[in-house]
Amino acid sequence: MSNMIQSFKIAVKGLKLNFLRTFLTTLGVVIGIAAIVIVMSAGKSLENLIVDQVQSFGTDIIETEIKVPITKKGESKGSSDLSGSASIATGVMITTLKLKDMEDINKLPNVIDSYAGILGQEQVNYKNEIRKAFLFGVSPSYIDIDKSEVDYGRFFTNNENKSLKKVAVLGSKMKEKLFQDRNPIGKNIKIRGQNFKVIGVMKKRGAMMFMDFDDYIYIPVKTAQKRVLGINHVVYMVHKLKDVKKSKETAEEIKAILRRNHNISDPAKDDFRVTTMEEMMSILGTITQVITILLLMIVLVSSVVGGVGVMNTMLVVISERTKEIGLRKSVGAKNKDILNQFLAEAIIISFLGALGGVILGILITYFIFFLANHIFLINWKFFISLNSIFLSIIFSFLMGIFFGVYPAKKASALNPIDALRRE
Image (cartoon, rainbow, N blue to C red):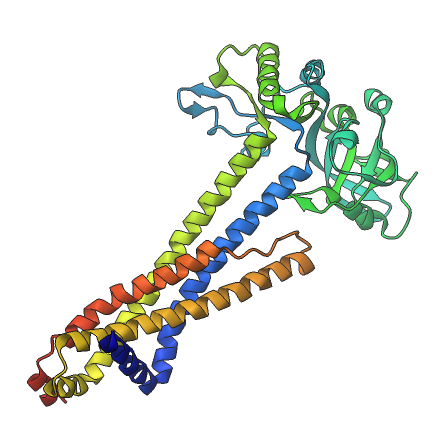
């Protein structure tokens, strides 16, 4: 034990001899370890953010969306199991999901109500203000099921939806873009050259799941279909449940209705996807975990590069201190003593790098939290993974041993006479 303590004392003195080189080598380890802490902490914060955003839609709902059906074994028509906006983005449009499907689903005993939705992008203008806007065609029941709220004015009614009334409710951002500080209620905006009367403005909600509801213009779904987009289908539906415990059973009942309505006998050829909130959160959790693991693997590679830097530095140190090694051996130092000394130097560099990396990682993680919450107004939670700290310390310790053994063995194997003769 005393020999090990002595080895560490000598190692510390050796590292102090060239402080700048020691600092730069340690810095490489610091960056790698900090990246591990940041990635693992950010991964957990991202998972929490996504779960919170999904739950903000309500935990008592089931979502039904369009999906590209499989035409052959293991293959999808035009793409691989695409759904919703993903299929639209690739140019594949599924037009089989209809409002009639929603009416049939609403008859299920565990379904309180549903709303259907479809998105479109059109030019919108008010006087001299011209904007490209996302139109969100939804059923009037949207305001009762979703967590969105009307700030002032009102939402459209069932009668206005059935009679294809040209009325609109503005998201808070869209209201600012078109009307600034003016009151828009009762004013007409033009969508595709048609006058739409503004009847309400939504409360500010913020971007959720990559959708900025504040930048939308809400119009009745039937008006969107017939008067604006010229279609007869919807992209997705949301169903509010009486009993969440029966969500899986209700999801199967919804699938049965849609297969009957769409004349589908083989479940593999479903042109829709029905997802419970439990399934959705599980899927999103898996995705964030996979992303975190992939990023962590990349970060570990960069950390290994830092370890190689440690080994390279130790080889240079040994080359410079060959005479010292020869002198120590000539006065009785054993191979084990020399090995322990230089191995201790590598471990000290790695440990200091881990300590600095953890501190830097925490500081950067807090900086990300501050930017997200105060600059970008995202509800990003500050989270430090204890696993990341534990992993960082263990990894740096193992890295110090792994990349320090070869230089240390090389130093301990030097012949004392040859070492003393070397310039």
